[in-house]
Image 1 (tube, rainbow, N blue to C red):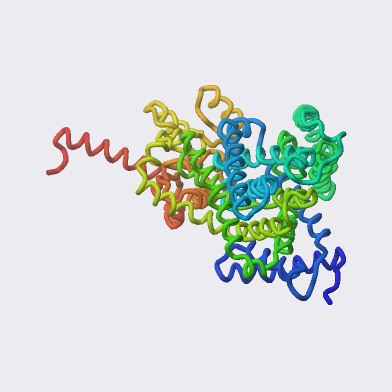
Image 2 (tube, rainbow, N blue to C red):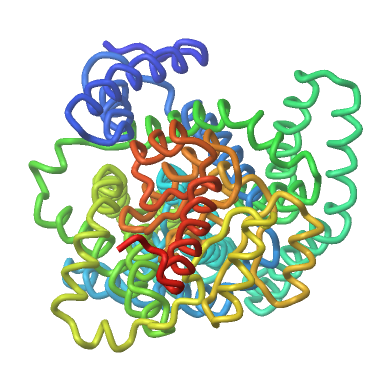
Length: 554
């Protein structure tokens, strides 16, 4: 008989099998999270052998969700979210409605009631926070415009699901489930109370939190203790997330996300992100293992057709609705595909909704099993789906006149110029005078503010740091101009730019033949040296003068 494992042995088994299966997955050219999911199946109750503690693993996974969303919040500001509200807010609500309708139709086909269909459809409509943010982060697009839209979409989904979790019990009697007591049946009061709590939480975080938590982080940093600083970051992430859930009824993920947003106001936010990264990665692994533990492989044998339908709703219904809506708002095809592929999976909120539906006698027990199977399959396939964005984009552009007509054709980010020194300034001024759109990446914050006052888009920071060059929207730029005299940093910029946009043109500054050769070997398109260009210019002038006076020697 399989025996129940304690906390320590559950963690040991989860990490050990995750390492082993993740290693084999990578060797087979598969994403490592596929191995993590298989590790969960191995130590879960559906297979013989080890049976890890499901409750413990779920709680550990929740910590991973908190830390991951805290890290995401550290890269986002309220302005970032508000900038995409026009597409994320109506788009997420419409996508939820479309998928829910598909769920209701499928449930009706299987002979389920309307209440079961609604719960089933809602559970299939909400993407996993962990999977989406982790995938965007691994591809370096989390803080790009595509990442902003996708994360904004997730925030709207989380808020909608938080409201639904509160409204479902009082509505269960009407939907064919177990009726609640009369004291809980005032729907309008319930909605008002729920929305009020959420608004109070958001207001506290954006008003008081933006002052208190950055100040607290700075006070701890002044002690000089790295351990205390890391502890402060983790305590803030987990503490605020827990308090948000217990006091205001907000999800752990959303609470941690807002905690990260207010911490972003601190000048130490970059250090906070770096210090919490190892823990975020470790607990994210536990999340995927816990998902695998919920899966019963026998379902693929007993009910393959129904599992396939569930996967189709998640990967086609969610994705197609999001794709068409983002494209309708005249965003680039790449943006529409990125958001669509990111929503082609489900996760933590789906499990919560399914469990609540079963407890209210709304959703049949087999419905919860289908949702779990759909989650594991779509989470495993999601990284592979993301890999199909580029070829799918090329295929659509080649065959769809409508997609080309609807897609926004004006690209406001034609050239990214790194450095606004003597060379970068002359290049930028010349491009601006000719009407060529540019974005400047510059480390001097005062220069960045001056450029913004002149209406020139600019970002502050070291462009060899991925978040900075991503924020400059390098993925949408036609050309990258590196005007800083630092070959080491320039090589890192080239690497990031090539990863995000393989066909980008590059122009780089060098100081010597050795540096030029090194940059050329790294794939730089055009490399210019000051002495070389000075000699060419002087020679050109001399030859023109000599030829003009008849002294060319011919």
